[in-house]
Length: 261
Image (cartoon, rainbow, N blue to C red; front, side):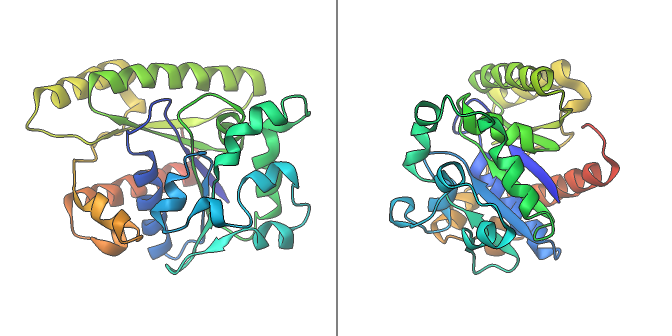
C-alpha cells in the first residue's frame, strides 16, 4: 500500500480535484484505491454526490470508535460506482477533533493505525487534507510516504506553500519520518503574466521538488464534479486530465523507486 497525502495550507489550489483525478487514473490502471476526505468541509465527499451530514459513518468514527479489525475498517467505507475506488467520507464534526480529543495519547497516528488494518485491501490511499494545521493534517502527514502539494500559480498561493513547507519540516523533525514531496503547479494559465512569473519563482526556489509540468486551467474539472465522476472518467481527452495522467506516471514511478521528488 502506498499512501499519498495531498495538502496545502491554502484553500482553493486544487487539492480535491487532484485527489479525484489521481484516484480515477489509478483505478483505470487496475489499482485498488482508497480516498480519505479529512477536510471538515467535506468537498471530496460532496464531489462524489454524498451529503456528509446524512451518512451514518464518516472519518470522525476513526477517532471516536477506532476500528480494530480489517472487517470493521472496510465496513466503514463507501464503495463508489467507479471500479476499484472506495471513499472514507468527511463530516463537519471533524472540526471538533482538536478540542474533543486534545488530551488523548496517540491522536496523531490514528490514520496510520487504521490503514495498517487495510494494507492488503488497497494499493493506493489518497488523503485530501484541510488547509489548516491540526490533528487531521498531522495524521495525514504521519501516514504518508509521498506528499503532493498542489500550488496555484499565483503570488498568494506561494505564501501558503511557505506555511506548508514549515509544517512538513516540523513533522519530519518531531516524528523522524522522512516524507518525499512533489510540488504541483495548478490552474496554470499561460496567457497571464502572473501565472508565468509564479511558475518561475517556484522553479527558482524549489528546484527538483517542483514537478516539471503543470496542471492547466480546465473548465471540464468543474463539469466532472457536477457529474460526480472522476475527471478521467468524464473527460479523458481534455488538456487538464491529460496533465494528470502525466502526474500519475511521475508519482507511481517515485513510489516504486522510493525516491524524493
